[in-house]
Image (cartoon, rainbow, N blue to C red; front, side):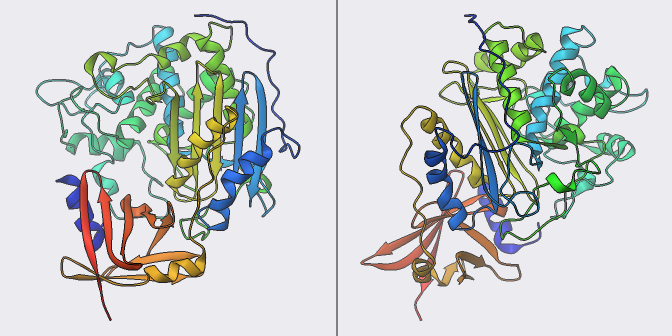
Amino acid sequence: MKRRFALLFALAACSGASNRPTKPTPSDETDPDGPHRAAVAAQVKPYLDAEVVSGLVVGLYDSGKLEIYGFGKGADGAPPNGKTLYEIGSITKVYTSLLLADAVQRREVELETAVSELLPPGITVPTKDKTPITLKHLALHASGLPRLPPSLGTEPKADPYAGYGEEQLYQDLLGTELQNPPGTRIVYSNYGAGLLGHVLGRRVGGGFAAALRERILVPLGFKDTFLGFPAGTESRRAQGTDEDLQPVVPWTFDALAGAGALVSTARDQLQLIDAELDAAAGGKAPLRAPMRLTQEDQLESTGGPNTGLGWQIDREGRYWHNGGTGGYHAFVGFDIKSRRGVVILASTSSSLVDRLADSMYKVLEGAPPVAAKFPAPEQLVKFAGTYDFQGQKLIVTVGGKRLYIEGPGEPKHRMSPLSDHEFFIEPIQAAAVFREEEGKVKALLFAIGEHTLVANRVEN
């Protein structure tokens, strides 16, 4: 990213079984009279009013009972429902890891199988300190591979993975230097997850798409989960939008499909939660053995973050994954203890969607939190002005219901609201907090990781 403002931030950032309920049948449509509709709507409303998202669908799971609620714009501008299609981005990694677990259960591979054993002769896979990359390393983001292959570059693209095929993947493996010895550090890598899908497709046979469909999607009974939007589904696609709610093109994948190629519906993702919870309870769900393997905490003994194969595990013991593409953001999670789960699919690329997940769990518990309170358009005016950041002038402006920030030689970035004085800059993953003294805005503080940077307001 050749933007001075963004580059500065990047540099700073571097310094027991139970009886299974009757199998649920999710509704294709939303439920206007559902028991939690009002509570869900209250949580979602601020995000729609502040134009954080153009539309979203929420799926709730509670011990076999399903609810689906749609808000804002879905396919053809109508409210979304249980069959509206969305890109789910990195949630694809859950399914790629499930394909790995299935292959392990079939004894086709082991978690410790070296990746090099599953590639054509002569294809070089990087090592470090004589440690080879294994399938488990790829699934846990512990391979040492960087976030992206070298040839994809770092410049933003409308469709960043388009045309990236097998030949490029093999060339990149030849020229990649690992950042860390495999198994020593967790560094999120789409490169590694895509490589995992590729080698599993070779081992199972027929390629990743065919293997995933035959081994995972069909056994789960999914009807609306695909690698990319299929022809004939245009009337069910939610139009993806960027952080400024402008329409964007879908993402397309080839060799790295295992990292983020899936599109799906709230209905299918609720079926995933149902199967995962049944597997955890010792039931007879399809793929129960592979699912139980993916749910095992792979890093508990190391003292690192709780991580399953494909799943993250939060402090409450809830399993989750999110996903974002150029025009969509998605969240899927479940809690084994309470047998509850949440699905959120949004047609805007905003990671703030994840903040709704915890609220939805509280809605299911009967204790919905106070809804987010974002500043009204007229309240944004006080933040507008010029701020001095290490000699650079940063300009904050208001456009309708939105706040923007612009640095020298770069385009405006949306500042999406977190509260009445806190905002989030999506492209650089930075929180921005306006500091007031005696009722006047005096400075803008940026929080990136453990770093806090200050830009003082320039008085006119």
